[in-house]
Image (cartoon, rainbow, N blue to C red; front, top):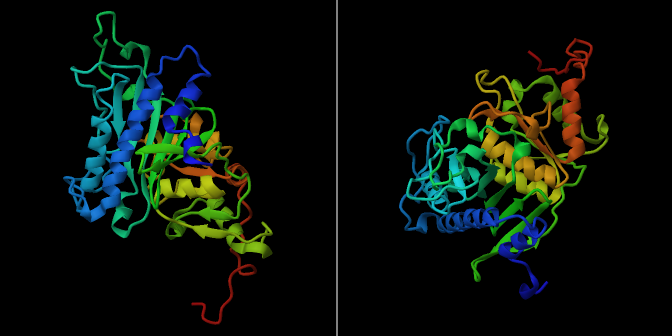
Length: 367
């Protein structure tokens, strides 16, 4: 399609808004500011060590609330998201992976109807090896009492509890991926659309309308180095995939593992597959590795809107009621039939243990 006939992100949002004549347009404006932040981060990431932006050089830093080392680019990306969204009058507050507590809107700025939750630079540990990284965001409605009163002043500050809404309450979510091209993938609750950044225009242009995750797949992604910590249903699923055509699934599978949530989600959205970062016994104090509010929920919303499924392994992800801002959770998403199979394995009685001498592996070199 000629460029002149393609829709920009702005036009797409205007067309979506027309479905709701009563809408005032503040959600559209907020999404465009989020997109602007992603453009700024994309530029810095693309330049790498050539960037003159403060903090763009890869190096170690402080420990964040997650117990992870903050790279300067994490902090810079976080600052970009805040500065490009705190002033616009559409937000009552923000929350980020890099901040221990919610970010208040400065008193000098008007407050709005929405909350923004984000992971400013997912997969930043992969930047040094030039693997695709991205930004993830989720937009929620703010409680009514956060809206300005009649005198234009907010009735109270935002609190952590205001963000603890299930994924089904999201009004918009998506991610930007910074790879060979920069793409923005977005849902406003009416399917999923992908936009590619045209660097000549400086605009996100609709290139992937109505994205759909295939219901079946022959690819799975999981960190097999954790296999000794997996629960039996996960081990059963992976073992069946590895058994291939001669096993109970009757077909061969390919395994992928990028260690970048955005890159994994994008691959699955484009060609199907299933991603698993399940609950395991590696650290009993952590019920999962990924964060519910700004990783699992927005990616889960995108997957469900594209016809896939997002789950904890036991239940739908979007139905989980959060209990903390930085809550961790097991996460399984992708092709619907594969995710449903994993959920079924979690609810079925464990298969009879076959670890008896009759069924044990045999080897001349067995110790």
